Length: 103
Length: 483
Image (cartoon, rainbow over all chains, first blue to last red; front, top):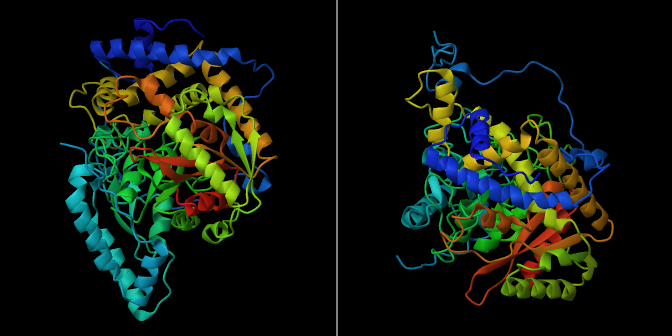
């Protein structure tokens, strides 16, 4: 958990996150990520064997507080024209994007 | 420019509403007077990002017409409110403090916004915040920092810094904010106002631009506890559009807050009074605790030994969830698309690079790293395990006490620029607030005196899940002591 992050790691993670970093940004992120990961490494002090992960606090609440699932009924959605009016490019039916496959 | 103060106490919600019902105050005049004050003061504080006046004045006119006819009025009839710019208002710009959403006008209302308006509130405008609610000082907004109305050289806190500053400077009677790791409570403390962290699921997240979905909450700011309780009563309650929203009935929080704090058992955790706590903040909180004793509360120590692990757990979980949530900002459906978009993948990465600020990128990278193959168990999995330990610790404590009181933040408001170069130092400003965020419990920040320099100190009053009423009763007692 305390292995140092490298420039290659930052570049790999940036690619996974679809972030194009400038070289000077990469250097800053490298420094910050290492500082933050050093800090969070103190979690290793705690023995958590046998502790179930908690992803959502809903399960801690009593029966009163538990979430409910709504009925699976078809309902009107947002107006297509209103939604598409906010998009950078459309053909009035679909969102348009640049070509996916290069020839 | 030298430091200035713009603090002004708004009239109480009950007083204003009574005037509107009696016809002695017109909602349209009230809204116009707020717009005049905003025009004068906003350039100095940078609180409002947009002012949808037409919609506000139409709503005010509806309230006036109803009042004139003697029709029943909602609990917030004619009350001018502001909305943090992470909640969507149909047709009004929604930026989330980010360049990537510049120009976006959402086609729907957030549930909390819709409920405020249905109760008669007048939505003055959208309020500045840290980009995607990521920050503790409001300095991460792409639209410039908000300044603290108490002292304009200082930050208002974050990420709902604008929402706290708006109430402190009387640029709204009340506001909505969001709290993921302390983003309502910490700015309330820095600006000397009341801020409420409702129980996770108490207020619908529908229409809240997501940061970390298992932590995000919507909550109110007001100048006094009773007004904040009234607002929570309006926005709380089950919403079929948010699967995590609680179906538990909503009490009359304002009436509950009138019940007094006599006989309540108050826990004080030593872990929140350890190294790093400013001595003046400590002294103010100790006075607040003495005031609670004088009001008939019993005070006893409680133990929350894993507190020191909360900031690491929080920053792993919040960034992991953020890295997933913010994947939707890709230049396809809304917001910024890079001109440099020859291919789909170039469009994604260039749009995101140009649109996101440094802190957002930092958190997306950290979250992506923590979730990536080979690191998931060591970081994200471990953090989720410790999250359970933290939550269980609170459940045990609330078997012994009705409420827990702590400082909201280790220091009063710091100066602009003081922590911007050191992300880790900024994260530590959240050290007393992230525990409640991770555990899902509720809390209220209430003003609890000032430092010698006149900077506000906030007390954090925490209560068990869905026990907001108790937190309000304790906060009322601290408020009544007028420290």
